[in-house]
Image 1 (cartoon, protein in one colour):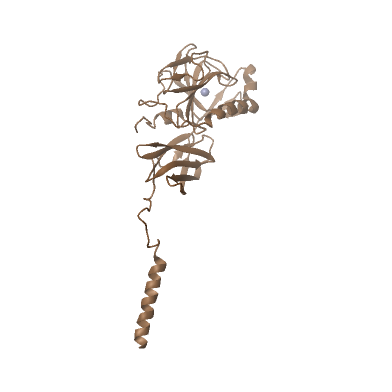
Image 2: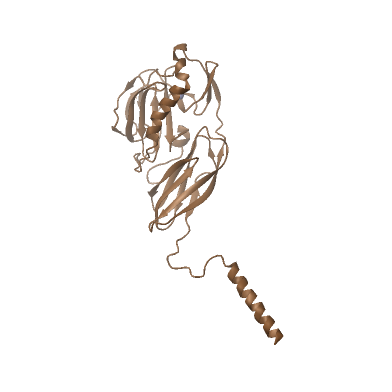
Length: 299
Ligand SMILES: [Zn+2]
């Protein structure tokens, strides 16, 4: 009798233990969603660089990611969602949370937490000497005002892909004279970080677009001088500065390789050159690294 009771208790404990150890309720319905898969094309992102994140799963309606307090929209293609995660050139090296928000067709949503490592951008240093008359263009208020104007565009992320199958490239054989992200000491007084890449070009050299898109701005800025800003869709913008002549107008559609202006020497510039810059999801990124991502249509 006692032995039977003990074995019954043992069985009860075993069953209870099994129930407690079960990670999920036994009643998994037929509508249980398949797990969402999140993959990267990178191990880490360098300062001023872009990484591609892909989210795949059943019944997904929308995906957004929050990284460094910026919302990165994702774009639907080929049965999945693709997002471009950008680390600003000024972001400190370290581990940062990436929140991936997934909304499903039935209206429910979930947050998936990931960690992204931001690594050194390995930016160089250079000294630049400006004519004294251009020194006021180093004032922070001038920079802030110009950046605020550009940020107004960067806030808008066009969900359509404006660039075509051939992707992005700057068609020039001009030598690069100033790399992206370099720290520049102007007139031995003021440090500023370079938002783009510089190419030596005689005044009047035709400047072409790096990809198809829509002209958002064609005008004169204090620091960038004669400037054209193009929206390529997906929160990707390219800018071309110090041009002597602008050959496009805001709202105009351009194709990759179209001439948009002639290079020049104006704004905060010490010599004739083209300054080419790219912003992704509101962050300045290395234009050459971005071109190397191979973001062709249909990818
Ligand atoms: Zn420059």
